[in-house]
Image (cartoon, rainbow, N blue to C red; front, side, top):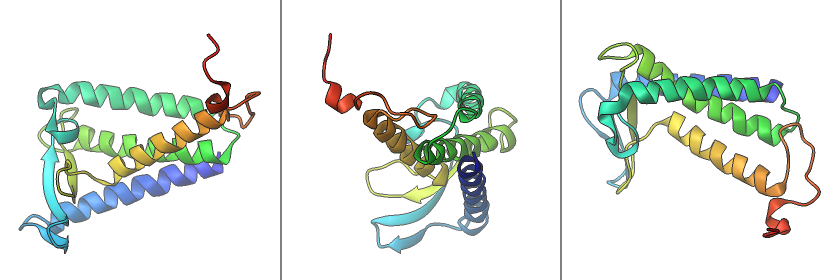
Length: 165
C-alpha cells in the first residue's frame, strides 16, 4: 500500500506541476525540444485523445470519477509491488486529468485538460496520459504472468494456459 500511495502522490504532483508550468510558460507559443520531432505545444482539450468526443466532456468527467473510485477500491487488496506500481500510476493519471475537468475553465465538470507534449502524428498529451499508458502495460504484464492483486499466482500464467475451451 505504501508503494501505491507514494506512486500516486508523486505522479499526481508531477502531472499538476507540469500542467501549471505549461500554462504559464507556453502561453506565448511553442518550444522546440528536439527540432520538430518533440515540441511543447499548449492545448486545452475538452475531449479524449485526438480531441475526439469534445461534446462529451461531462461523460469523461463521470468516467474518470468512477475510475478513481474503482482504483481506490481495488487498492485495498494490493499485495504485489508491481500491481501497486501499476494502480498507483493509473490513479495518478486518471486523478490528474479528472482534476483538470473538475477545476479548469470553462466550468466545473466541463473543464478542459491541459496537454502540452507533442510528437509528430500523435495527439498532444501530458504526464497523466503517460502514467495511464504505463499503468496499462504493467496491468497487462501482471495479468499475463498470472499474478493477482494480492500477489498470489495462478496455477499457470495466462500466456501458457492457451485456449482451453
